[in-house]
Image (cartoon, rainbow, N blue to C red; front, top):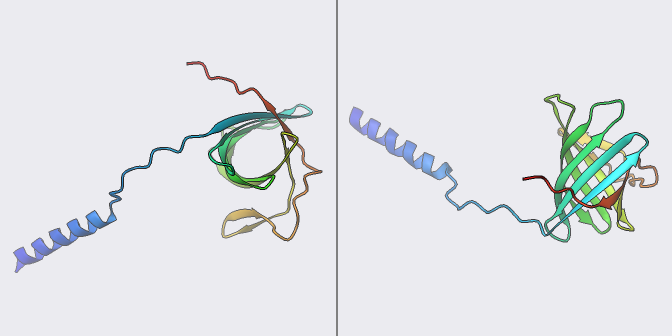
Length: 155
C-alpha cells in the first residue's frame, strides 16, 4: 500500500511538472527595421531618445533625460503609433536609486520631430494611464525631439 502511494505521488508530480513546462521553441528576438535617434534641449536640461521601429506602429527604445539641478531619468520606452501620435510606457529610474517608475508619455510626430505632450493622468489598479476624456496638450510640452545621427558604440 505504501509503495503504491509513493509510486502514485512520483507519477503525479512528474505529470504536473511536465504540464507546467513551456516546450515551445524560444522565439528569436524581433529585429528592428530602423533606428532613429533624437535630442531635445530645454534650457540646461537635455533629453536623448533612441527608437527602434519594429513595424509601421510598434517601437522600443531608450530615453535619458538629463536635468541640470536634479538626478537624471534613465530608462526604456515601448509603445505604438496611432496615426501621428506615439504613446509609450516609460520604465525608468531616477539617478542611482533602485526604485523603478513607469509612466505613459505621448509624442506628436510633426515635421520629422517628436513633440512631447502633457496630459491628465489617472492610476487604476497600480497602472497609470492618460485620461481618455481629456485630450493631450502638445502645445504645452517641454521637450521637442529633433532627429540626430545615432552615435555608434565603440567595439
